[in-house]
Length: 77
Image (cartoon, rainbow, N blue to C red):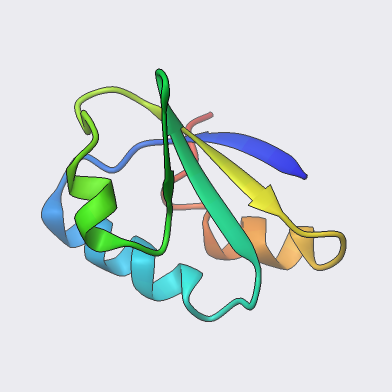
């Protein structure tokens, strides 16, 4: 599992983020405080406080580099 901090501060970013995740047959969780939601769920994402950075847990054994390349626009430095 790999964890990265991401920012989803606009509706368009959320939509493109979910579209990017659905390309992969891997589980993704978003963690904000005590809440953990499925990162492929648009409704779930909008239930979080999007004004703050969110932790993304990537549950993959292989292909992490490709996933991180795809998610680069959302990952915080």
